[in-house]
Length: 230
Image (cartoon, rainbow, N blue to C red; front, side, top):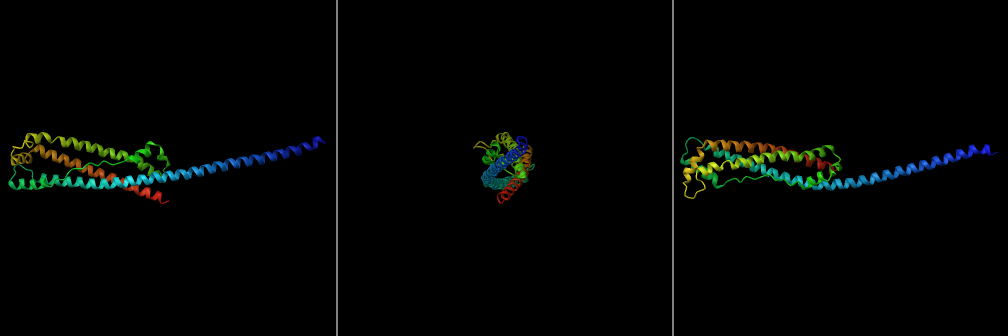
């Protein structure tokens, strides 16, 4: 009789064990799914906060950049007006025109973006929380764009220093020097002509680089808006 009941008992045990195993597996999978779902909610909340702060930073920088590009273009225009006065001779009308330009000079501005939010995002390793791969790539590439402009800025500073030998030679720093004579010496100087051309060339390159960065800023802002709208 024992041998007759053994298979039935074994089959019942196996069925119960399989049922219990399935219940355990389903429970584990459900727990993992719930954990992943909850973690996903937390990640999306963090991503939203990151993008909101990042958007404000990019909007502020973009406004500043647009204003700075306008300033650079004004400096280019002013330099062009001065360059038009240059030649082998300088007359009283040229000197009067230069005086009018000097009376309301355009003060050169540097573009110094704030990127605390961006730096924190990249250094903290949270860039991976941004789901849109295009947005991630553009954010990661942005510092390299600004680095290119930093190189142009350093060149501009070096160029600005290059004018001092001519200014010193023309006695422009001395209060007893004759203004007209200094102006004539500068406006007829080939050195000044070359210097002004070099400065304007670099400024035009900075304007071009600035436009590239501004376009990148606006594309990033648009991608952030699209993500925040989801």
